[in-house]
Amino acid sequence: MTLISAQHTLQGLGQSAGRHSNLQSLCSTCGKYHAGNDHWQFMQTMPQDPLDLVDDLVKMGIYKENQLRAAEGVNAYELRKALFLKRVGRDDPQREKLILALCQQAGGLENAFAAAFGPQAGLFFGDAIRNSRQTRREFLRNMAVGAALVSLASCGTGQTPPAEDAPTGADVPSNLEKTDLQIGFIPITCATPIIMSEPLGFYEKYGFNAKVVKMPSWGAVRDSAIAGELDAYHMLAPMPIAMTLGLGSAAFGVKLASIENVNGQAITVAERYKGQVNGPADFKGFTIGVPFPYSMHNLLLRYYLATGGLNPDVDVQIRPVPPPDSIAQLIAGDIDAYLMPDPFNQRAVYEGAGFIHMLTKEIWPGHPCCAFAASDQWIEANPNTFRALNKSIIEAAGYAQNPANRPEIARAISERAFLNQPVEVVEAVLTGNFEDGNGNTLNVPDRIGFEPYPWQSFANWISSQLVRWDLQGDGLAPQIIPETGYDTVGTDIFLTDLARELATELGQEAPSEIYREETLKFDTFDPADPAAYVERQIEEYGV
Figure (cartoon, rainbow, N blue to C red):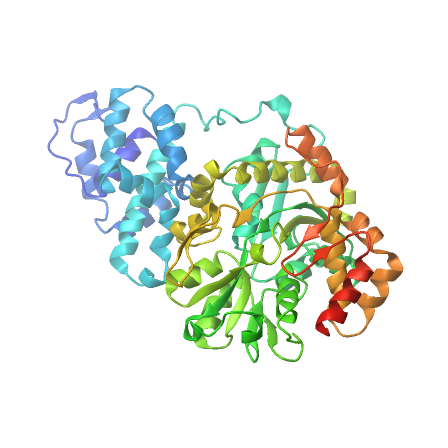
């Protein structure tokens, strides 16, 4: 996109062109030689309605699809700090004049950032305003401004140069079997390292043209992985174990490469039960949603309910609910509560639909939740790509673990293409500064953490609970896991040694041990003897 076409866009979006002479001269606005009234005459032929104008500009080829995507994807912080100050102005007064005029069209500099470049752009398509024609016009107008700014940023170079911390060509692995990748994810904050690696450049740093693909449910993730539709996946930590052993599906080998997050879940109860739920026994008779049978959510919920004297298979109904559907089902009365990933707990508070009964970190501090995973077949076919991809995500997890980076990350992943949530909701989860729906303002910095090390004790605890609850009711889990061996199941599926190796290469601290004693709210888990742990649980609680 040229400077003169950007100026055409500016004027078409409402700026008065004024009168110019017909002499050929150097235009002080766009820097080109043309008659003084060319801008004004051209704009008389352009539609005045923003919707029609943007459609025409796209058809004319002035705006490319990648420019619009870029305008929507760059977050406000990066724009202010890097793109605008270092790139767009380039100490050229004429360029700065044009840029400021473009920003003025969006109602000021901050509005231009928020509307055209920041995660707030996604809010223009929120349910509450989806049918507002005026709001959509304003959005399209500001998206056009954003595309012009992005184009100006790369004008004269042909492409946007890498960020200061991007690798040189020598840093990109030269032995990748595949560079164009698709990675499936569920739109929850647990997937933060996988999601943020696209807009913040972690995939690109390792030589990948990687796109994250939003999936509708965990069942769809499992089926897509078995069908080989995508390259790698965001999975729940128990899924690779269940899939490899043939629990809930045909046996299909999957490796858990690294943990995406620890903590980060909560039990949320419908607003209609406020004041009535104080402990696990109070859930009797409830219908409770979890995202998937083979999830930490289901296992932690069962663990918690059993301590209140409830049999999770008799005294409550536990129902799989895709996380994006959870709030609607809570409001409709289809479910009474749920143990779900964020941001859907915080979003329920934000919408007045429910209150947070308990964060899962109170049940098991530092528990695993989600993971980066790939099939045995794909890893075998793409070993170098798998290693580099895993490394990029482990590096992203390290970046996300730093609290100072989380407001920036919240803005990046709140976008419509990713979580499609209000940025303040996502930031409340990531920073741990939040309202709980009970009138309390809390500060819980470790509400969610991003520690990628896949402890083998995680695998053994998960396996122990699959044995305890026999989720598919056919006796397969209680048979196959002890026969195979808890440690064997874990070491075959959780790639702990590789995660340590990659973290060490990145300068991250990684434990030398693979097992640790896990302290939960109601007991302590010794990974050396999972069978005895299950026996004690059944003996104490009857299930």
